[in-house]
Amino acid sequence: MKTHLEEKGVIFVGSTDGLKDHPEIFRKWFGKVIPTSDNKFSALNSAAFSGGSFIYVPPGVKLEQPLQAYFRINAENFGQFERTLIIADEGSELTYMEGCTAPKFETATLHSAVVELIAMPGAKIQYITVQNWSSNVFNLVTKRAMAHEEAEVRWIDCNIGSRLTMKYPGVILKGRKARGEVLSIALANDGQHQDTGAKMIHAADETTSNVISKSISIGKGRSTYRGLIKIPKHLSNCKNNTECDALLINSNSRTDTYPAIVVQGNHNSVQHEASVSKVSAEQIFYMRQRGIPEVDAVSLSVNGFVNDLTREFPMEYSVELKRLIELEMEGSVG
Image 1 (cartoon, rainbow, N blue to C red):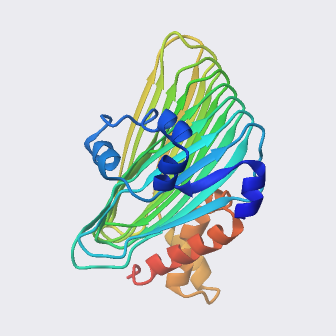
Image 2 (image 1 turned 135 degrees about the vertical axis):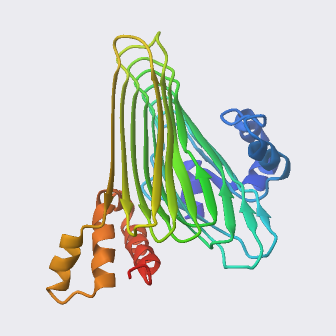
Image 3 (image 1 turned 120 degrees about the vertical axis):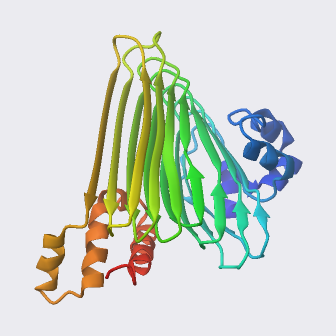
């Protein structure tokens, strides 16, 4: 795709190459959405980053094919500091997909990424992540976008594996009629904690945000939704919808929800919905009576629970995601 992208004026290189070859763009936006002082992990990443993607899409260019990257941790006692910076100029559109994985080691490894997205007026960015970490990985990342006037940013996020994941993709809705959306799936198995959520900061009139989170806890796994919605009092005609659904597979599974919604002013609309449920014994019984083994029946039930979100993934990612869920379910019943 490189020749095709170059013809359109699109820059798609590693972050180090982006800094070296395109400093006039890279330096202008580096650290502007997520300052170095934002948290200790963003400071560490800013000092030691290597790898990651740098993308710039010129005004009016709409990419039909998604851009893809793959990150893998290959060594013990390893720290991976991915730095991704994506700029969609005025009226442009792109979809970016990344996959992350790591083989299992005896010692802990760290993935500490910083991802900054800038959607200029009228631009659209869709950022898709499928992470399948081994159980020794600490996945502590900072991901944030800035959406200018009438721009749209969508985070579609799937988190499987890791010892601990702390990830809260956010959108600063800076321009009038900007839109932000986070769709996330988290699956926590034995010894794992998926602490995920979203942040939507409304900073202009007529901005809209949507957060849909689905989590699955297996065995003694723990899932947590942690979100922040903020609408200051001087804004009007802002809208937010937040949905948090959790599914417990076993009696020892755990889920927690910590939504923070701060809304001021008289002309804004917010709605929040949360549900916690266990796998339906009646549904499993129904499928087993038709010759479906119990493990397969539970997998079908779980895939049905996340089906609305998996349809948002491209076809090959959706198929892979369903297979990953099936693998996680093996040995979880009984």
